[in-house]
Length: 257
Image (cartoon, rainbow, N blue to C red; front, side, top):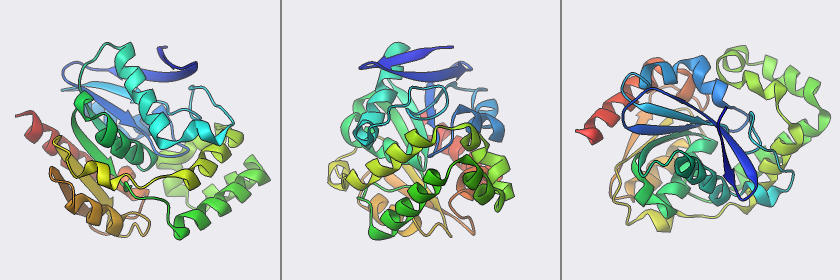
């Protein structure tokens, strides 16, 4: 069970397959099992060395309770720590939601460590008021405890079963700290206008939090393209593997040619 150490914070990861490396980083409240349940490592490991990471505060990684420990730029250095632990110079990167935001940080500040970026359902912009209100409601829910969270999740059973099951075993204090850190999110879009690494930015057409902003920001990144997934909402833009995986594998094949 490998762990990387980033300034005393242990970051858990799994590897599978051979070939060029690709890091997978899940969304908020997910973990390594989120990818595995949906079958992404099964498909990608046929051609790639798949590195699946538990973000800090999630899965088997350490769980600080200070919001400052969850800045996006800090989580990005966790990914670098994993690559260093494996002695990997360059890797592809695929992040969804929170993992997508971390990917923008990596593209902005650590582009030399990556071959390409696939960034789903997120933007490099700062948190808007809609996002802040969502965070306030999320924190209030966490403070009610795991049973209240379970009831809310059960209302969307398809998404619960396909991606968020690990949430019920998660540390709500760590989730709260990460959510509070969102208010400190900075707009890093200006750092991406000189990006030279190939980048695929995508979002579900019905993802009100990410779609339009991701599209706008991608248009300003010289090596990025934006893909809109028709009819999909936020969670479906990772759970609908029939639409996402072909797009991902095609992009990886293209940039690896």
